[in-house]
Length: 126
Image (cartoon, rainbow, N blue to C red; front, top):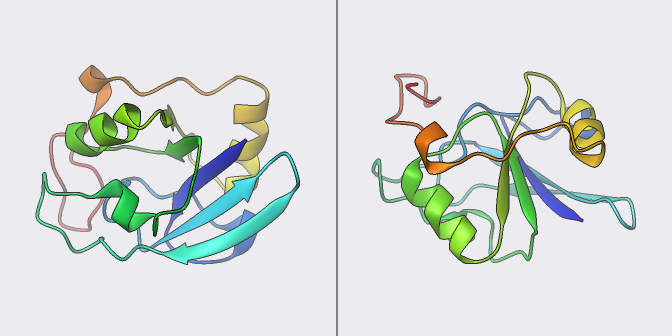
């Protein structure tokens, strides 16, 4: 499975999963089928709230899932419309969350679980 993990920085699998998809500075992309790890800068992180373009943020990379602490309804809807599932991360590293998603232990994020806005530090304003 090709999975995107929004992160604060690029420390590979030891990067901490970020609290909000749209404003994450970077993404760690993991292909769990072949074991590759790639980093990507979020080119859409400075968008106006509600105007997130998730595919632009992901640089057009093909993924099947996102694992994140929180996400706005617009980005969630756009990702889901392209067949990408979004899972709620636990606080911790990409590696920890990768193990959990592979075990089927992370819940899908639904619209009623989406973020209502950004806080001052760019994370979700739950």
